[in-house]
Image (cartoon, rainbow, N blue to C red; front, top):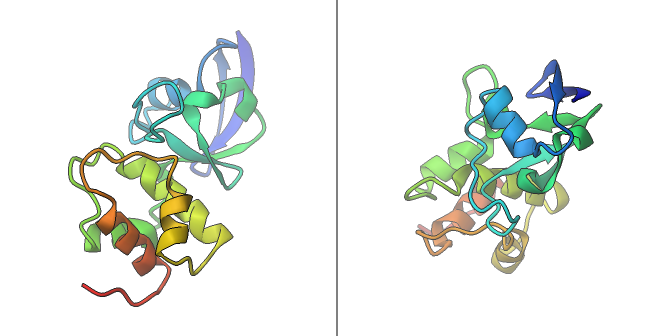
Length: 156
């Protein structure tokens, strides 16, 4: 076992973990952060995307011990004082989900995209989320949600 100290959604936690435990497993099994979804365990789908020190990572591709001393933000950590994060609100407003399985990872990736490029065009959005798969929507409403969250006028 290895002792780690990590800040998750603003709360400092300290735990003993197996050195081979994935961050996604740690978040879900040890901390109950089940909004971080296990989709493929191969880093292909992006459903497990979280922010590590403010940058999106696929948590099935990161060991929990690698997060030691760092800050992790999950989908559960985005809302503030009961208010949805603007990206969460935009996904809701634009109906950018169907089954919802990819939604947490897609939102986390989209926030990182806007941090890098606050006003991306449609092509840049599609390229920015290409590592996150949605099996239901065809991405049209997801792109609209990212545009809406960025403050761009979007045709309905």
